[in-house]
Image (tube, rainbow, N blue to C red):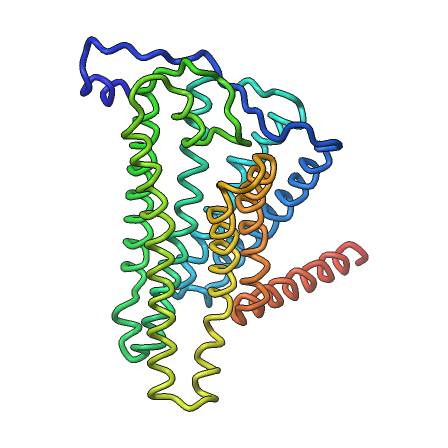
Length: 327
């Protein structure tokens, strides 16, 4: 970030506090039980996403380009919850609310990167469904392993650069109003409001970033499914249309779980209590990574069959080991 600040002028000095204080939820009785609940959500998320990643890696039948995006989504969910929940538990459950300045910016970087990649990963899966249903004869040519890997890699690069810009803009702020962040993590919007110098670039980014990371991906997904529905209504019978659309149920469930809570939270943000806002945002952050693997295992026939096959193989290997022991 030194290069970022040097571009603004060598003689500019910014006041950076030694640490921030994460306020979190205040005045609520028995709030520790909520953090214990988050811990169990985190454990389920880790197990579920690890299973999905392992199944895709071990089963050679799951080598379609779509499963590159599914694997990446499981990785992002696992990585994102691991970046967020353990730190949140350390801050609030063990009352370590003071977080060093650089650690806070690192915390912000990983949380925003993973949250953003979840959105773009749903775009990749939406594109896969669009081509598979609208152009089934060209699917093997248009959606290749190389294409999907390139698409996912470009999303990663784009998101990392965007979040690094947000972090870089924070480093040019002089924090002098307070060091208390009224959130459950190092939130960009809460941090720049603590500054006493010009924070218009941060404000502009906070307005532009949701459009780039949230609204544009959602618009692409909605337009994709409107086009899918329109095309199926024209060229397919009701039974064929339902059969084709059934392949989208898993993805649509992921889209609903990710976007609907954010839509509700952003719509009601100005009219709800700060504690309610923090609870809504924290649940929005941890619940999709927990539910995504469950939905994909239950709704995707290939993954379901693969899990059953791996469990049968494991069961047979246990029986074989027992027989060897008893011989």
